[in-house]
Picture 1 (cartoon, rainbow, N blue to C red):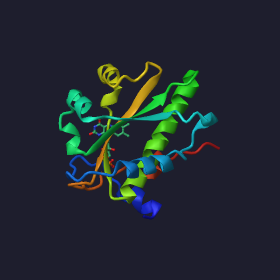
Picture 2: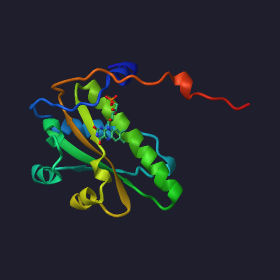
Picture 3: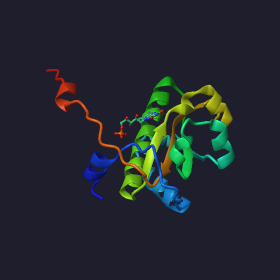
Length: 161
Ligand SMILES: Cc1cc2nc3c(=O)[nH]c(=O)nc-3n(C[C@H](O)[C@H](O)[C@H](O)COP(=O)(O)O)c2cc1C
């Protein structure tokens, strides 16, 4: 799929088909996503697949829309505050790479920020020196919502002489 089409058509998916996804396909997409930019080559992302028992314990309000696979993407803090924010930015790039690659394979995703909670962080045994940048539920979409409109980019552009 053309990159422009993947960017334009990708949607957050909140309801998934029951069909399973081959985990090796997911790993191959993560392998490609790793080419994301990251300052000082910190490669701050780590992926934690969340099994059925742990998933139940998370008590997500829709059980992640019935997605066949749920995983957390964590981001190491690094050594300084600057590195911390750079690492978060790099991990977000990694996630977006993954989302677009997955979409091109017909796989949709729901990005939940529930990992921001300390209780979830503890449940997933994520070390104190890392953030959960997102919990991703992925699967084949049951429903694809319409695109949400964005502001004209001209309203976001300014210039300094
Ligand atoms: C960092 C981040 C956290 C998000 N957390 C949630 C969330 O907790 N719950 C949710 O419904 N959507 C969450 N989303 C998805 C956004 O709501 C979604 O991207 C937005 O509504 C635009 O829709 P689209 O992705 O279909 O274009 C999150 C997205 C990002 C980037």
